[in-house]
Length: 193
Image 1 (cartoon, rainbow, N blue to C red):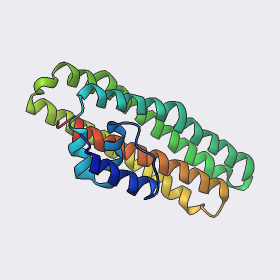
Image 2 (spheres, rainbow, N blue to C red; image 1 turned 45 degrees about the vertical axis):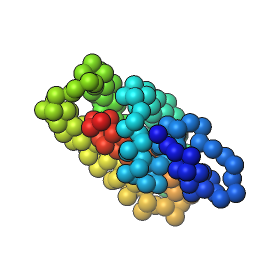
Image 3 (spheres, rainbow, N blue to C red; image 1 turned 120 degrees about the horizontal axis):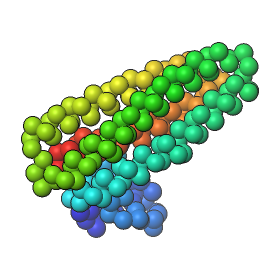
């Protein structure tokens, strides 16, 4: 778990030298470490029970589906309303985004209906072959999702001089960052704990 020294370092790096703010708990601290020092974060996250990791990942799924994605969809509507001459571009991007969302929903269903239950039932010793197959399948899903997201971000960036597209790009970057952290925790901590 996070030591007093590592929590102090984390507080200084993340919140500033004069801050008295502390991470809410050691799990949150480990997540912050993961962003600052990946190896230390992995080491600390591997100390948590598998159920805590799976609960965290499932909560993230809800965050994506109930908050981040609807906010991005709202931004597409704003673009259509505020930038009528770019409506066709916005509609094209929105169609790609909907495809991305559908792929992400399939990926989430795979995790929640196949991967997480398998890990829960055979946690004490997931057979090496099964974990490798699971990791390969999971990694393939991640690659597809990130390819679509990168293409969306690149097209949005081309119109980044327009405020609504800049806001869309920022929201896509937040989603991408969250998904990358999520995937890293699954791939580097949960599947190989």
